[in-house]
Image (cartoon, rainbow, N blue to C red):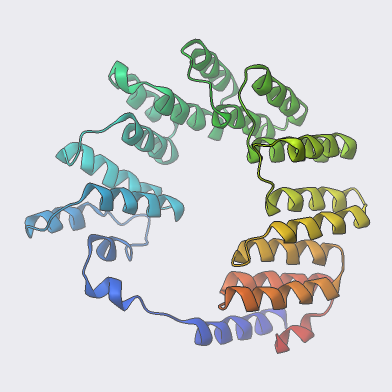
Amino acid sequence: MHSKLFSEILIRNARSSRSYYTNTASKASLYSRISPLGSPTTSVVPELDDWIQKGKRVRVGELQRIIHDLRKRRRFSQALEISEWMNKKGVCVFSPTEHAVQLDLIGKVHGFVAAESYFDNLKEHDQNDKTYGALLNCYVRQRQTDKSLSHLQKMKEKGFASSSLTYNDIMCLYVNIGQHEKVPDVLAEMKDNNVSPDNFSYRICMNSYGVRSDIEGMERVLKEMESQPEITMDWNTYAVAANLYIKAGQPDKATSALKKSEEKLDKKDSSGYNQLISLYAKLENKEEVLRVWELQKSACKRCINKDYIVMLESFVRLGELEKLRKY
């Protein structure tokens, strides 16, 4: 029954929201040729070579935008192919930024050993904070604790550990290996080293307290975050707090945090609405689920399948699945 209703909703949504990117296709841009090649096993190199053979111009900015888009869509192998093709063909002289992107992609596709090899073969002036940071991220992603901490020490010695991103990576490492109790120490070290925590730094620290059922610790971090003049509070932070309150069995505080989250929400951010809907469903607050859903439909104009899936899951949780038909 659930699957039948689910299919009905998605089909109905597809009929009402289908769109065709005719303008992009008619221009026959390089992006329009690469974008449809969605299979991870499909190489994009033939398209790049054919583009050149036909005498068409290759713009560095366009290639960089394509790489960025493919990374967002988790098509890492194809993004790496384009980066390697650019480097091999001499489309542009790679700066440390381009090297960092390629290093990150190598790590995602081939693992940290291949990323290490690429890093070691870089010229000295290309081994800067960006490429060091990219390699650190590779280690963290594969939970290489010793290598991560050793690499961090090298970054400190070279003066490259001066951004929140570096310390955020180490906090993520401890989360990934289940050592949540070490996360607050990293936040403290950041501040001792005059590195300002960003929103993500505070959120991951809040969560580390919540995972250990230390709500008072979470609230201390949230209060400190709210007091920082350089921090702009966002909906995601209050949503994290709300989720932790729900898990701790404190529905009133969770509801208060959700109200603050909604106040900070970009009115066209569908992912934010989805998060609020899911959290209100956890609180078994059907009225708020429906209210936020109506706000989302009004503000975002067009709902995609992901939005309907969130509502479906919420109504299942509320035991109100049949009523979803009219929405």
